[in-house]
Amino acid sequence: MKVSSAVFSSSHNRKYSEYNDILCYLNELTDSCCAISSEILVLGSFFGENMISAAKKKGIIFTYTDYISILCHLSLKKNICICSGGVLVERKNEKFIESFFICGGKVAFSQIQLYTSSFERSMGVSQGSVLEIFDYNGIGCSIIQSTDTLYPNTFRYAAMQGAGLILCPTGFYSSYNKYFQFSGAWNGCQMNNLFCIESGFNGILYQKNIWGESYIHTPLNMLDFGRISDYDLSQDRLFIHADLNFEKLFECSALFDPLAGLNTKLYENLYFQGEK
Amino acid sequence: MNLCTFLSSGISKKLSRIPQTDLSSGQFAHAEKSDGRLIVSAVQRKIRLVTDLSAYMENMEKFVLKSKKRNSDLIVFPEYNFFDIFGFIPFIKPLNFLLKFFQPKNTNKPDSADQNTFMHDIFFMLAQDIEDSMKLLYSRLARKYAIYIYSGTFIVKRRNNLYNCGFLFDRSGRMVLEQMKTHVTPFEEEIGIKCWASLETFLINDVRFAFPICMDASYFEVFRILMDMNTDVAVIPIANNENYDIYRAARGIWARVQETPMYGIKSSLNGWFLGQNFTGKAGIFAPVNLTASQTGVIAISSDPVGDFLVTSLIDPSSIRLYSKSNEYSVQHNFDFETQNFIAYKKYNPNTIKKKRNP
Image (cartoon, rainbow over all chains, first blue to last red; front, side, top):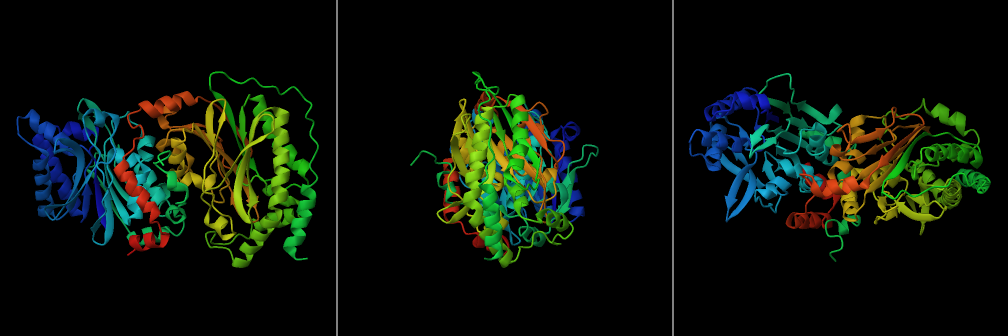
């Protein structure tokens, strides 16, 4: 399965700063992904928020639903599934960060971020409560976004429910540190034998510097370094891509499979220590 | 008398000859630090087959003395910190040397059932003697040097089951904690070593230590439980029988202390033992933002093979502050975590395999 992860670096952010430029970026990006027959494209977290903010500056009324509509249109026209990355969504007086998986021009699935950072809590963002697994061509998929990538239980839970592919739109508020980002999705992918498409957003939003790099992760037993493809600062590329072999993924579980050795008796007090 | 009984009785005899230690020396006095900071040392050492316990003790004492000279409060020895005593077996040294060149092509292939039964029986017969002699030996070293010693791990027998277990001795030589491994490797499982199902912690100068073992560091669950027990420092003794690779190493304690902020102290055993090549770097780790290099590594040995003593000052108050005040401080999500809990309750590794590989 060919998959792509969008690269939206600080230099892209400068180059595509206006609303119309961002539309052009999305067009160029999806065209390029189509050219290599990519089936799935993951956008960075807050990419949509960045577009909403650019539209606002131009005086254009543009909400997250408009952003999703654009992605639906691109998905249908270019025959590609798109993960939107997190956008701020308000429902019943509650704010959430939600990512949408768009397939054949329609929203096929959405996932609310489960954990919040201190800045997100200060903005009034609430936690989601469920991590769903959805089926894409017989492969269990899940969206684990941004802050959730720093919680290893999200990857564990997804793997235990049968996921083999994780879509990770990211964007962090802390100061830039690639090792910090590695402790999230790369680590989750290693400990659960998963493929992971991580797409980082870089830019300034809510007066905060947001950063994230783009990678496609694989378990170490499949490839040295555990990365099939990563973001290269020296190139001004729009995306990175990889061809994922799920048969090999399941084979490599035979070499190192933490899921086979869980000690559930020990975990009886996990999360609920002292609550009994 | 079969081979197993013959070998174990020979080793047992030698284990009973505990070397005498001069405990009268008062030169190794200590003063507790009042600021809650501690100096810790992690041992990385090569397996050296010895022909008697005195030689083993001498080798270990060198590390203790060196750490004491660095004012360490605690020294940590590695997993399987007793392979050296298999040198008691006649002709094992040349056999060990020859086995370097006759390794199985596929090291991941399980050994035969016969081999596993033999290993199990040897450990089963020797476990009590190894435990008794090692406890005595490390207790004496702790007392002599007035230092906390984590002995590294040995195979122990409890209620007719084998476990991989480490011991902590206080400055007076008293054994104050024993912790068994909670996640065993497939090889350990094959030779009949069981998983333990609880975690203990111990306070040294108001700093809370925990002592999970090797494979336990591949499980975030262990560290999440330890974090909820207010653990400041996790000690991880390892003995990895594979070639060193920085990325493989990063899946262990380094990753765990990023997810659940605490210090991580890794001790490591290396060298060839019965056709297996053990490698690994001793190191001291913390969340990336608390390390000068911003890599999550405070100190690490320069080579995955050989003898090293890695020492560093640790300041748990900085971890406690960081845990509470960083942008991504660990939070609870009770709804989602309840689902996690249910998933563990329903856990069946075969069902997961089927789900993932339809």
